[in-house]
Length: 227
Image (cartoon, rainbow, N blue to C red; front, side):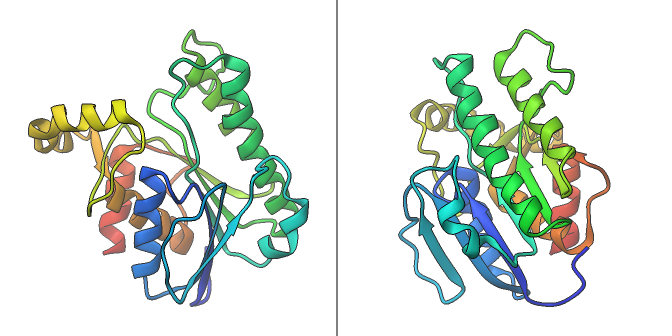
């Protein structure tokens, strides 16, 4: 658990829907000293506590290792939809890219908090039919073996807040169609929000997590503690 003020955070996937929400909460949090974003494109945001590194090869961090050292937490929000992808390509983006970052951070800052945005339905046995669930499960299992305080976030539906929009068209259409059902889905624990995900991540970095795998309800409860 974080034992001092001035949290230093690394954020992967800051331009995605979840990452945008997490970045917003990090920059609003008074105890976050700095946020370093790593990604193929810049966020376009400007903030005194924000530093961005545009890094095209996310499987090789040798050139930026010095920048990655000395952080308290990494929030890994980078990911893609498996729709239309082969298992090989999805594994390269989901497993290879995630482990490339985690392995470097485990060596540079052993024991740091590493939060991975997985998904509801992820298969820890790595044996089920759904390809994405197996690959996510393989990724989670590999992260949990590293010398990190690794925590898996398994949200279901995530409602974008504060003007944030998904870059994936099919998701935008789905959110528009489900909009009237959001209150019901939230009450059932089937949906969280980008705001709650960000706040929950910060709470885990500050105080630790109740377990290595967190569901929508866990995320929402942690977010309430962070307010």
